[in-house]
Image (tube, rainbow, N blue to C red; front, side, top):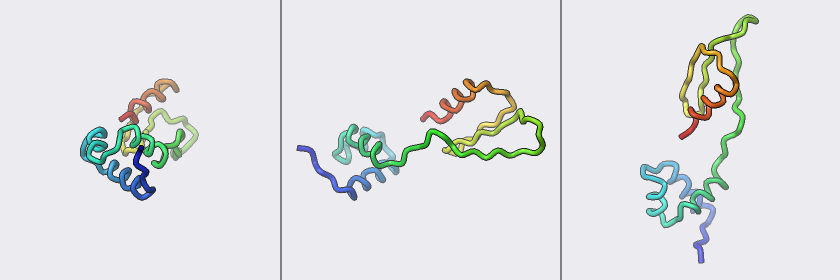
Length: 99
């Protein structure tokens, strides 16, 4: 029968996972938990990123801006003067945010 963990134990496992210096599989081995159980608790308890991000539009005048800066959640910044099509910009964001 599976081990029943308290909410405090689950929270402790998740916090330890966030601070880990080893692979996911190794972390699970060290803590006696299967990777599927860890993934289940991560999906259930960790905050989920939203599909939309709050943006701030700044600029002066009514001329359209041809340059932009995209700042991702992890602090990465992409600046460009290139005029992206919507599909190209979407692809760029997906690639930049992939881990």
